[in-house]
Image 1: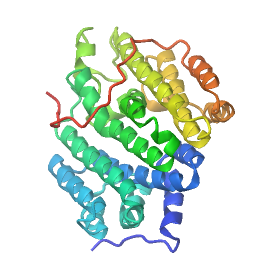
Image 2: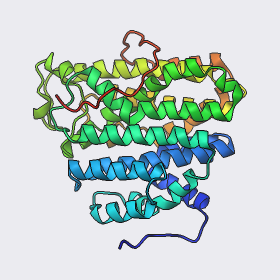
Image 3: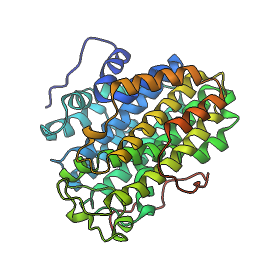
Length: 361
């Protein structure tokens, strides 16, 4: 039996305490939301963080990841007790898993227990997200390698499982919270997946060398093959000519997705300032990260292109000041995105889970 770490505080208090330990960004943005919505979104994020912990654990085989992911899906759907999931996963976690994520796994029952106390419609949105995310990530992990993904389409599928479905879930939660937001539900859903992909592509580019050290690469081969670059042979100390241009192509695509994220944010009614601030601050930090990558194309670690705490604070203050006006947010976006490569506008089309999971082909 695994010794489960249970602190004497309430489940909500534990959730509030663990959030900043497992996420720098969301610990800043979630408290901007209206109080009850913030509790729900924090809980949803931690469910996704547990799914990510399974994906990121290097000691787990692909088969173990599939099995434990299915078990976690069953726990969230109330088909299995959380304690059984913790007992299955906790002993398998290696020292590579951060201590805070280990504590989150040890207290998974508390997080899921809070999930089960939310209204049914909220639970359904969260259950769907976890089921799609955990299943899709496990499928991609089974075939991950330093060769990268086949093409942009496959990268889109990967980003959907990791982040696009989260955009769909958040949209449902926002609409359930505020009828005024729900009036734009269809238009928001057409942008939600793109919003998530813009943030995820930013993370993939920032973390490309760290992922490679773990034996994974989520970049599309076709973009690099066209420049004679073999993704399998890349190394931080061995960066071939043309690598910066290939990265710029992906920066342009991420930039286009973030323009859709701006359009999404502007559809939130101005009086819902908390939701607008939550959305735009994430966009602002992503744009600053993309610019940092663009300025330092030969970076060799995510730390080198990570935005400073001062930049995070300034972008947050700007977001607070401008959140109530569409014109202000539009001008702020243009200023933050200055100098970034641009791609053609992306279609604003709702995305659904692919009919089947695609790994590396």
